[in-house]
Amino acid sequence: MMKLIYHSFTQALAIASISAASAGTIDKVRFGVEADVPPFESRDSDGDLVGLNIEIGNAICSVMEISCVWIDQPYATNIDALKNGKFDVIMPMTPTERRREQIDFTDAMYALSSRLVAPKGVVLEPTANALAGKRIGVLNGTSRENFARDRWGSAGVEIIGFGLNSELIQALRGGEIDATLQDTVEIAEALLNKPEGAAYAFTGEVVSDPALGSGIAMGIRQNEDQLKDILNEGLARLSANGQLETILAQYLPDQQQAMSSGTRPQLEYISGESALPFSEAVRAGNMLYLSGVLGDDENGIFPETTAEQTANILDTYRTVLEANGSSLDQVVRCTVILANLDDFAEMNRVYAGYFPERRRPARTTFEASKLIANGKIEIDCMAYAE
Image 1 (cartoon, rainbow, N blue to C red):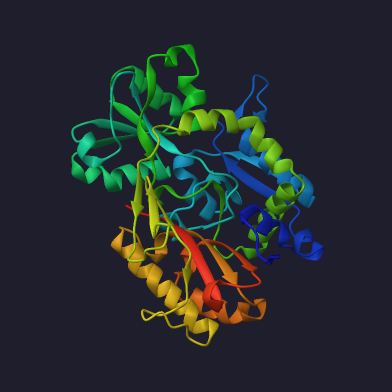
Image 2 (tube, rainbow, N blue to C red; image 1 turned 90 degrees about the vertical axis):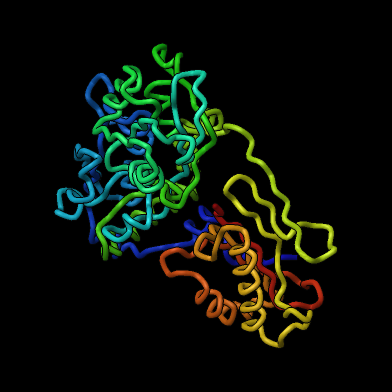
């Protein structure tokens, strides 16, 4: 029998709570949005705002009993506009380390993926070598622009920025660029699902990189903890009552599955020194899935304390990750299994010291009645790997 104390991302959100008094001090939130990116945010024939992010924002305001104000804002300049007080929230924005130096972010609302789009029959892989000499279009101010300029621009790839998606698509159709790096759902809606998009298609694998972020969130000014708590609480309530899932199902699942599936990633099974019937790790594309590790030392001896066993496990993971093109700061998720929940605080003190404060992975922790060899703790993780 296992006793769950931390849950997956959306469940963990639902556990969080802020007081009504705290929420009551903010009665209006101003969202900055560029209404030119269907199905995420755009205006209908009557001029009304519609789309996935509009519905999520309005739903948060509804469950938190505050009012939403929507302000049209060019995406490429929205960080400066946010910092200067033109509005309170950038809706939406992908968190990246570079952006976190300037602003803060809420919890992620959902995940998306990015791929290259080119004329049908053109095969391009998203690497600097494959794209050398090519002209790649990106939207100004996006994480994809930063990624492309950093990873590809210095290697002979010409990166061309555009202010509007419509301008980028026009350049692609006019032959001014060879391909565009796009969010898969966004470009499907804007081009590929339309008659004029019949001559274009995704090419190459899904692009995975920490510079692209790991999900779509809302950007806020730094040190605005009360606003951040309110927005995160709103997301938690939408998750708990099923409303967030309903909104996402309306806009993303079928399209995203089709658009982001791409080529099945190659699998690499990485064996350790053990003769046990499982791999030390499995690489799938740019993700590394690590088997669970117990807290014994190199001689197979278990230290007496949970703290020592936790350190042994994470030291082992550091070695395995670095040997496979990754590191502890690229870990995206871990599961911690304790033989006794009374050891939770002891484990947590050691665990926290192994991960950078702003790059701590998502985590699940639970108690099991007994671990192998009477160990006190077992951890398994997954990480991004070059």
